Image 1 (cartoon, rainbow, N blue to C red):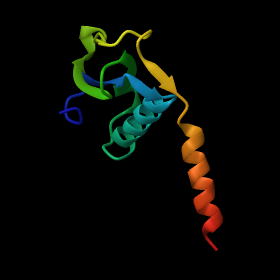
Image 2: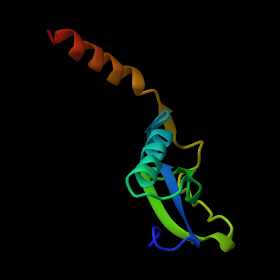
Image 3: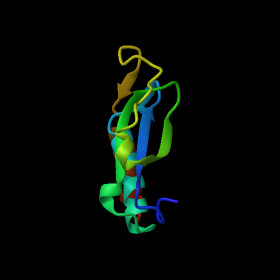
Length: 104
């Protein structure tokens, strides 16, 4: 529908889980937008992503939204004071470095 009707914008509303990794939402959002633009041919200005805060589990809402309707609202269900953001990057980088050292 998005490819055929220029009146609509895709809003990607990303919600982190109660416990989430730092930068996870942005990385997922950039990857999804890149897919829609490069693989599906959607103009970049017609794909908008928003950080919606936190919910119990990671969630993504994809909304086809009329340009004339303004922006959709985000609806987090976990208060930011109740959520936890952890640094997961160092663990995965360490594993990747160890794997690369083993290869001849």
